[in-house]
Length: 162
Image 1: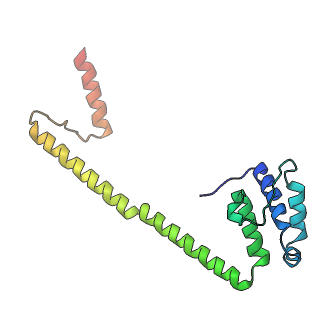
Image 2: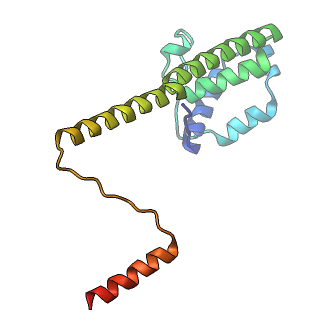
Image 3: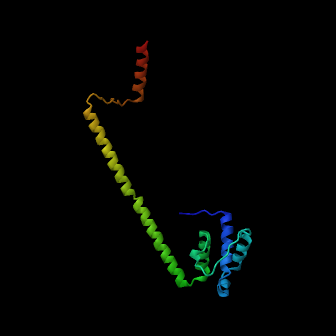
């Protein structure tokens, strides 16, 4: 599921992110691009107050999902080692494959068409049984006529009415 975040959501997330970054080591902060941090400062919500409690885990804090996403992206792009990045990519790939397999099982076109064939067949059988039960029903006979025959029939009908 794709979430759509507003500009206000990003502004609050930047405020939370900057507060969390205060507790990072100097070495970690130096790995982050200065342009990103400047952009976070410019775009943050100046009216929103967020305090980070370093005694609590991040999960226990009142942090938005967007902030966690931004933190994860910063970690993957700038702080994680190559080995950690590869592990994360592999895990994400497996999770996506699992989701795709679940979707294929739910929306399997073969099963959908099988259900439709069965339903059509059952419907036709019921129609036939109804027709056999009520012998008085007569089906209209459809004649195949070319255009000239149709015109002649219409002319005959007009003359016969007079």
